[in-house]
Length: 144
Ligand SMILES: [Zn+2]
Image 1 (tube, protein in one colour):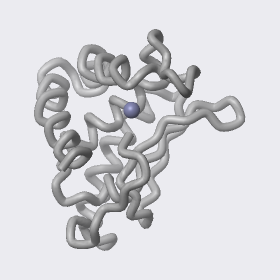
Image 2 (cartoon, rainbow, N blue to C red):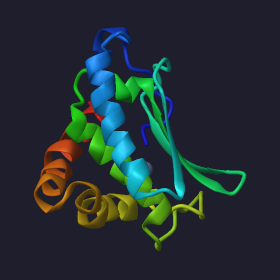
Image 3 (tube, rainbow, N blue to C red):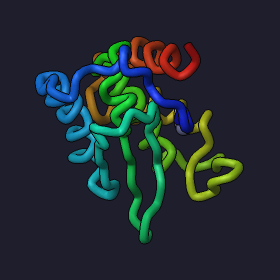
Image 4 (spheres, rainbow, N blue to C red):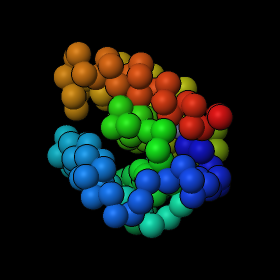
């Protein structure tokens, strides 16, 4: 998603903020339950400001890095948006990503997140909220 950059320490929540970590794990867990064909993990200690959809040994994977998971400017809404976007890379279908042709394009991943993914995981009303508020949060972090 936001390739390569590192979140400055001042913008990172503490690794010991277990309440926040539990909130984020609940969000990711809801995706994991709804989409069992995808493996999800969170690299809490990594400061990398990124989330990634990839295929490893034929299995679809989504990895959330600590620099996003612990970012002070992201609430659960922003994380929900990011997870839906990454899931959209796997499940959105055509058009394909120009370089990673086994994934959906950025635009298609966004569209799938907004029209299908968030509603499927969170229901219509919360899904709509995450598609607006969460997307806005994530865009601010990606393009400050
Ligand atoms: Zn993307």
